[in-house]
Length: 242
Image 1 (tube, rainbow, N blue to C red):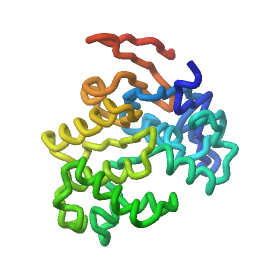
Image 2 (cartoon, rainbow, N blue to C red):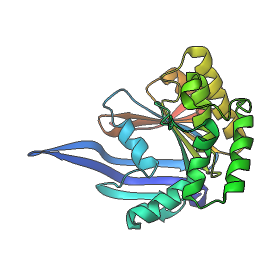
Image 3 (cartoon, rainbow, N blue to C red):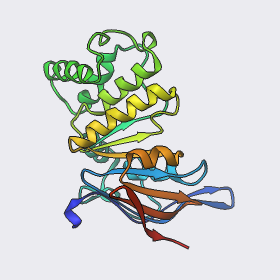
Image 4 (spheres, rainbow, N blue to C red):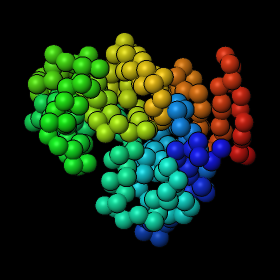
């Protein structure tokens, strides 16, 4: 059903002009993200998956087509309006963490709530609660450079949840971590999904996608090459674009 879809891309293209050449980073793509799903957008470097991530996460406008976030076409919004809508509905976890080094873990988690004009008492209480959830209750007043890579990524997860978003978008969240720590991070994301959060995982790793996702969009050369759905213990390819 249409109202079960939190994000929809319809015939979306993203083109960049480089001198006399037009580069089609994304070319007429359809993507549907259903509420509560765990979706992987998968592809090698240069495939268009990063562009897909930016557009799916409403971080950019498309050159052509429509991007609907909870039924609202972001193409109709000013950047300031989009930032407010995006800040409430989507939490971002980046491969490079993107934490502010001269702030503590707690202050980093509080930051997104400032932009939503949450009062300071609520910000502090929520940040402390989230850091305890990701097992960093004893590190909340540590600065970022005092934390390990895995701890920093858990701060990023807590920050992503600060405004109770419906969607968590994770861009290669294990890319800078060892296997054991990466598995812990993915288990955190699975727990969030089990509690009803929609997870979008951007990855180049098909094994990671198949282990955690229930829907996979495989992107290549700026197009969706195929879509797969997990059915029981197996996978069914439901679309293949020649």
